[in-house]
Amino acid sequence: MTTASNAGSFPGRLTAWWRRDKEGGGGESGIAGPSGVQVGIDELIQLRLRARGFNLDSRRRVASASAGLHASRFRGRGIDFQETRGYQPGDDIRHMDWRVTARSGRPHTKLYREERERPVIVMVDLNASMFFGTRQVFKSVLAVQAAALIGWAAIHNGDRIGAFVFGGGRHHEIPPAGGRRGALGLIRELVSWTEPRSQPVSPVQGGLGEALRRLRRVARPGSLVFIFSDFYALDQDTERHLMRLRQHNDVVACLIADVLELAPPPPGRYGISDGSHSGVLDTAATRTRRAYEAYCARRHAHIEAMLRKHAVPMLRLVTGQDVADGLRRGLADPVLARASARRVTG
Image (cartoon, rainbow, N blue to C red; front, side, top):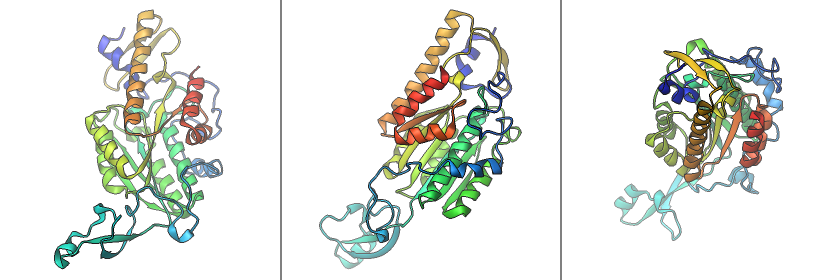
């Protein structure tokens, strides 16, 4: 039997050391690699056709091409500086040019030229807890597939795609770029991170909060940011940086989950490990199953409450689910995506 402490942390510390036999062989989506443990470049390139029609922008598009493809709620932010002129009633005080104002003795404000393309940034969590899966693919593979789909969708929409990939105490930034070059640059980087043996076994605490802090310095205001993560180790720093990122950007949270992080496995005895310690989980015991279910419910309720507090929409992608269909439903209606994810676990 596992100890009480190991049992309590089981859903958040599962690793690739233990996996149930996959059901259904290669998977329903037809896009997972043969093992579901890694992805290849060709596999992610093939996703470009399935990304057509994704709704990355529910806001009204402007009529004039010279004003940019997207109507921005962040007027004058995250765009190129053009000139300074005298302040006029209605100008945003945040854009005051204080140096010219002090030198001339009259208030001046900065003007900006609106970008023709909007940066789309995929933030991909590839910490140790992501290298686990019991249905067809690891969570890391699911996250990378979803990020690649968003990349192709951004290119189809005429936007630029960038990335912030992190895990195991390291990170890598990809500046937003347009066209096929931007998509292929994203894919090459994602593939290089999905080798499980290159990742540390033990989770790195605080990784998400630190990554969000770094991302805030990289993402230009007005960007559309997708966060692909299992959202473990949430803390006040994570919430603070998420709130500040949300102030000047559109943020969508994509919770990556395995079916065993939503409900316990069938009654039985299962070997488990956190990478350093191993034990046995006995789900035949009613008390254990109830505690497991309660833990899962509390964790997901906490994540949803935090995101709702900061007006960040959330969609859930679950191993065993067709990733393209799940993303398409979620981008159209996050409520439908969560309902679909629940059906997958049934």
